[in-house]
Image 1 (cartoon, rainbow, N blue to C red):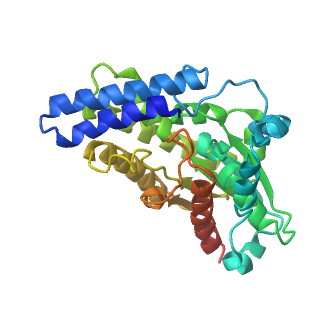
Image 2: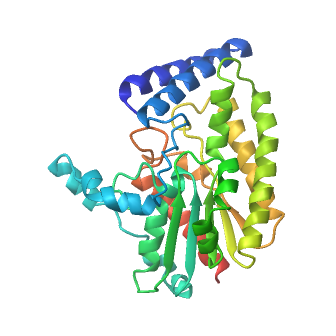
Length: 310
């Protein structure tokens, strides 16, 4: 996100830390969310919040391959050095367990966290890091990435009816899912002029029902696969730790995902919010992870799935 918009948002939200009257505090939060959603919509030429992209029918990974030369061309010599210093994979602490994924099919589906938006190296975000780590020793683990910026839970349900996706999922040994962040931001967009915590409470119930439907569809498509729901983080954590409402919303929605996972066999919830409390893990848009952020997500995901394989 450009600095000329980040700074006003930071200033507005920080004003809320000294505000005791909830009505005024709510106005500040509304203004900040308005600036944020307006910028993201303009920045991505989209009617949806920052994770969205036009659906041109082309697989996101193929589209990325077509643009990779242009997108990854550094603007300065120091950019080349910075990218070269970033680790291609995760350390070999998981090496023995990783070998158990030989000839496995891993399918990732979800929003921009699956697509890898914010990864300045253009190497596929956390999914790319896991793929390089697993296949370092020629495990022949196949990865399929159906990440799509802007995806909400209701849209994920519809994607589970697409022939290419259902066919791929039917052969999956492991399914990785990121969803939920855009559902929250959609609430903010639709209620920007009169935003209340109750708006998020109502939509959370819809989100929960959507997740249940997603699980049902997944199980019909792929009855024996291991499914992992990856949680999301509070993107404002590094700036606005004092604003409890933002943290509460993220915590409640993550807890909803955790509950659905715990109610179903062979489904696991992977938390990542705690990883983003410190460190330089955010991309220039101050919303998505950068490569370092995706690296810590990949390590957490690999920790969970390798333990399941033990």
